[in-house]
Length: 354
Image (cartoon, rainbow, N blue to C red; front, side, top):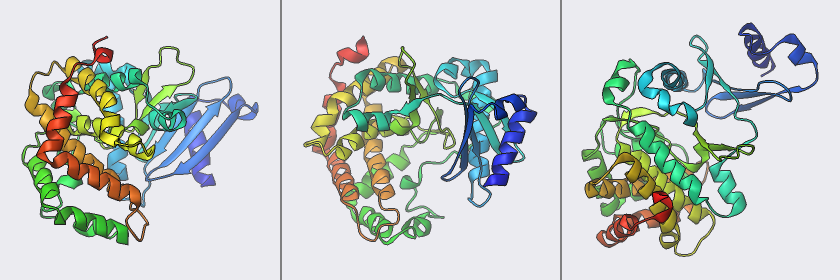
């Protein structure tokens, strides 16, 4: 890792982002980490700080995903139809296509909403309303403007909707762990879940810029920001897709938080927050179509299944969290469950209206 770190520092110097004085005055520190990609945080006490994401050559698809994320940020900086998103996205300072490395202005002392909610035990309705409005903001970018970017979007639904397609991701998904295989098999063995996933796939419309990984953990808030404004990060799964997927993921994120908090009667407990999110989104997007809400609720059930699958990684048996999320998804897919949630979300929300 040390030679890579040296290269990162040399690149920052070459781009004029840091000076030799910055490196030797004792107020700079470099953090390194690895998930799907490599990431670095260069933090200065008195100067600018940076977040660097670099594709890992050993991970399939990372070069393409980091490149896509950089192209989204470039569009926000340079293209008129995207500039209204500057206040809600990270600021790209440099992108090196040869090494698939992008340098962003670090959002200092930031906390993601997932960590904040777990620490406080609840979500802020103000932040939930912002989440809904932010989704409506980027969903409103015209498709002509998206097409003009000449970005290589995959233009395909999430893997949860492609289990029965050819080629199928089943071999890869089942191969992650014994629990992963058991969870996928349980989805495919349930007629209601299969029918909901097929319905979502059949009604998927690729006509909007979507984030693709819309969740609490991808919203950051600066601790020093008195206005409490959110930034939506990690756009590497962005695509030309169905806006109902992002909205369903947003609704699902609020349910997942309640499950993690071991809240009794999860759906009832999450409903006020879900209502605020939906009211903010639908008002900002000027939605009057109730059929779209039905689709979002079905997408929410699918998102809960994805989350349940993610909890199976490296597990031999199905975790309790995975089983709970599948049970809730099954409840949502019933006619009674969907009608109850639809009626609850359609009720007025004073928070969003304000």
